Image 1 (tube, rainbow, N blue to C red):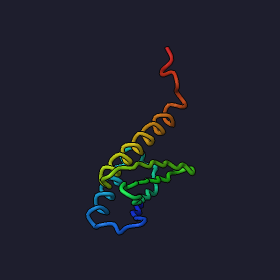
Image 2: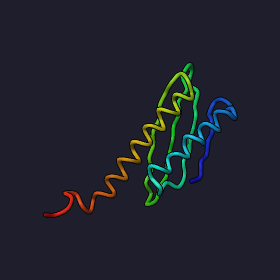
Image 3: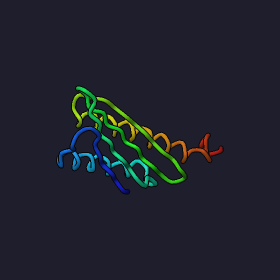
Image 4: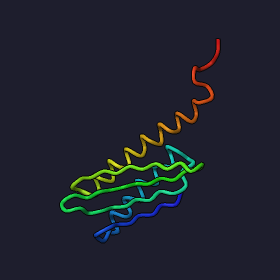
Length: 104
Protein backbone atom coordinates (compact mmCIF):
# COMPACT_ATOMS: atom_id res chain seq x y z
CA UNK A 1 0.00 0.00 0.00
CA UNK A 2 1.29 3.42 -0.93
CA UNK A 3 1.21 5.94 1.92
CA UNK A 4 1.41 9.72 1.46
CA UNK A 5 1.84 11.99 4.50
CA UNK A 6 1.52 15.76 4.12
CA UNK A 7 0.84 18.86 6.19
CA UNK A 8 -1.07 22.06 5.57
CA UNK A 9 -0.13 25.34 7.21
CA UNK A 10 2.83 23.85 9.11
CA UNK A 11 5.90 21.67 8.63
CA UNK A 12 5.65 18.06 9.73
CA UNK A 13 8.39 16.68 11.92
CA UNK A 14 10.09 13.45 10.91
CA UNK A 15 8.86 11.86 14.13
CA UNK A 16 5.22 12.66 13.27
CA UNK A 17 5.67 11.40 9.69
CA UNK A 18 7.17 8.12 10.89
CA UNK A 19 4.38 7.69 13.44
CA UNK A 20 1.74 8.32 10.76
CA UNK A 21 3.34 5.79 8.41
CA UNK A 22 3.58 3.21 11.20
CA UNK A 23 -0.09 3.63 12.15
CA UNK A 24 -1.35 3.73 8.56
CA UNK A 25 0.57 0.62 7.54
CA UNK A 26 -1.54 -1.35 10.04
CA UNK A 27 -4.67 -0.61 7.99
CA UNK A 28 -3.74 -3.37 5.54
CA UNK A 29 -4.71 -5.88 8.23
CA UNK A 30 -8.29 -4.65 8.17
CA UNK A 31 -8.78 -4.55 4.39
CA UNK A 32 -6.17 -6.07 2.13
CA UNK A 33 -7.55 -4.44 -1.03
CA UNK A 34 -6.55 -0.95 0.09
CA UNK A 35 -4.21 0.57 -2.49
CA UNK A 36 -3.32 4.03 -1.22
CA UNK A 37 -3.64 5.94 2.01
CA UNK A 38 -3.24 9.70 2.25
CA UNK A 39 -2.72 11.30 5.65
CA UNK A 40 -3.16 15.08 5.79
CA UNK A 41 -2.42 17.11 8.91
CA UNK A 42 -3.82 20.62 9.18
CA UNK A 43 -3.28 23.22 11.88
CA UNK A 44 -6.31 25.35 12.65
CA UNK A 45 -5.78 27.99 15.35
CA UNK A 46 -5.24 25.92 18.54
CA UNK A 47 -6.25 22.52 17.20
CA UNK A 48 -4.74 20.00 14.83
CA UNK A 49 -6.88 18.21 12.28
CA UNK A 50 -5.97 14.86 10.80
CA UNK A 51 -7.68 13.45 7.73
CA UNK A 52 -7.08 10.01 6.26
CA UNK A 53 -8.29 9.04 2.79
CA UNK A 54 -8.00 5.37 1.87
CA UNK A 55 -8.61 4.30 -1.72
CA UNK A 56 -9.31 0.64 -2.48
CA UNK A 57 -10.35 -1.57 -5.38
CA UNK A 58 -13.56 -0.87 -7.29
CA UNK A 59 -13.38 2.89 -6.63
CA UNK A 60 -14.05 2.48 -2.90
CA UNK A 61 -12.98 5.51 -0.87
CA UNK A 62 -12.95 5.73 2.92
CA UNK A 63 -12.52 9.10 4.62
CA UNK A 64 -12.17 10.06 8.28
CA UNK A 65 -11.30 13.37 9.91
CA UNK A 66 -10.70 14.22 13.55
CA UNK A 67 -9.68 17.36 15.46
CA UNK A 68 -7.61 17.41 18.63
CA UNK A 69 -5.13 19.65 20.42
CA UNK A 70 -2.40 17.05 19.93
CA UNK A 71 -1.61 15.84 16.37
CA UNK A 72 -0.75 12.34 17.63
CA UNK A 73 -4.13 12.01 19.37
CA UNK A 74 -5.88 13.29 16.24
CA UNK A 75 -4.07 10.65 14.17
CA UNK A 76 -4.97 7.87 16.62
CA UNK A 77 -8.66 8.82 16.58
CA UNK A 78 -8.70 9.04 12.79
CA UNK A 79 -7.02 5.65 12.40
CA UNK A 80 -9.60 4.15 14.75
CA UNK A 81 -12.43 5.57 12.60
CA UNK A 82 -10.89 4.24 9.39
CA UNK A 83 -10.35 0.81 10.97
CA UNK A 84 -14.04 0.71 11.90
CA UNK A 85 -15.08 1.69 8.36
CA UNK A 86 -12.81 -0.88 6.73
CA UNK A 87 -13.95 -3.67 9.08
CA UNK A 88 -17.61 -2.85 8.51
CA UNK A 89 -17.14 -2.77 4.73
CA UNK A 90 -15.24 -6.06 4.72
CA UNK A 91 -17.92 -7.80 6.80
CA UNK A 92 -20.67 -6.42 4.58
CA UNK A 93 -18.82 -7.48 1.43
CA UNK A 94 -18.12 -11.00 2.76
CA UNK A 95 -21.64 -11.67 4.06
CA UNK A 96 -23.61 -10.43 1.09
CA UNK A 97 -23.80 -13.87 -0.56
CA UNK A 98 -24.80 -15.71 2.62
CA UNK A 99 -26.85 -13.32 4.73
CA UNK A 100 -28.66 -15.95 6.82
CA UNK A 101 -25.88 -18.46 7.40
CA UNK A 102 -25.93 -22.14 6.51
CA UNK A 103 -29.22 -23.75 5.45
CA UNK A 104 -30.65 -26.55 7.56
